[in-house]
Length: 420
Image (tube, helix red, strand yellow):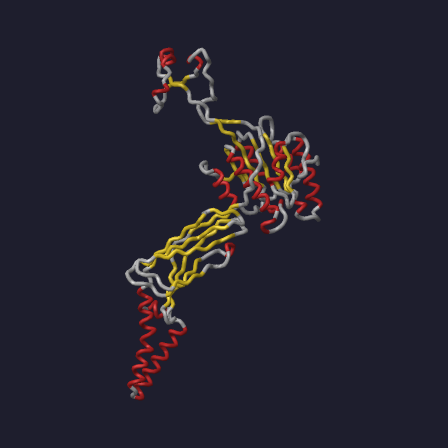
């Protein structure tokens, strides 16, 4: 009841004050009719407060996001499910969901009445041009009486998370040779036509399938021997993203940093779909990606990545060097000075394919001559160490230049395919 009295609207307080005033005047003047009017006017907001307070905890709420991940510029549908879990119908309900500013204005709805055990579903859409992880909710319900005398707000506790991932462009297939590594007992062995004598067995271990026992080797060695498992081959690679604020130009969704994140997402998803075991490295070091659902894990990580204050790529190069076993290194780079380019270039050696996606940040800032000079020098240095160069200026899609990653040789290519 106290909550109901605190929830009186301006109209409700006016009714209550007028009723009390009428009662006092009726008492001093001895007017019975005025007394009856005073009782009626006073009782209306009190009864409304009692009714609204009684219906305060009689609603349940659920929320569904479809899809739970949306690409930048894409839409997601939010479905609210409200259920009246009591035997009494509700009054007027004002629904408002909490939505971050980046997803648009807060959605508001009005429900006239929800019958006993009734269910209402409300849909609305959200859209964001900015990457990130956004919390939607909690939902607030304002319960009002038909006369507008009382308005009580109730907030649910549940909330959901919408992940807005970078834009992913479909890339053409490019053959990237690299070192293939595996995780079984040994490399795949072929059984010669002569028979099982060429099979390389090993000693029996607890838990091995008895159907793999190699009886001829068991008799020869005097202990139980089993056939080795075939090697499970998997191509391994690393994706380096230059996230230094110092290395990028522009602001907002069209900045060179956002283009770099989108390019890294497109390349990572493309390589993951081709079966590459990928790890993500930034100028801050290695990022953790789950083994299952690699492309989703990559997108979730890139959705929340932000500028770093680092001035060099030292930590990123060190993380690439310590990882080892990579047959492919793809580096998405911003403004790089020649000395940093040499440190990165030395990571590529025989058996490793290096692809450098160079953002020409001078095209985001036409007056930055230093960045333009560095860009040309970095191309020469990386190409001289055998890296494949993909130049990405402002206004160019990674999908339109990705085919240049197949070009070998000690020269760089511009977006039109000519030698730079």
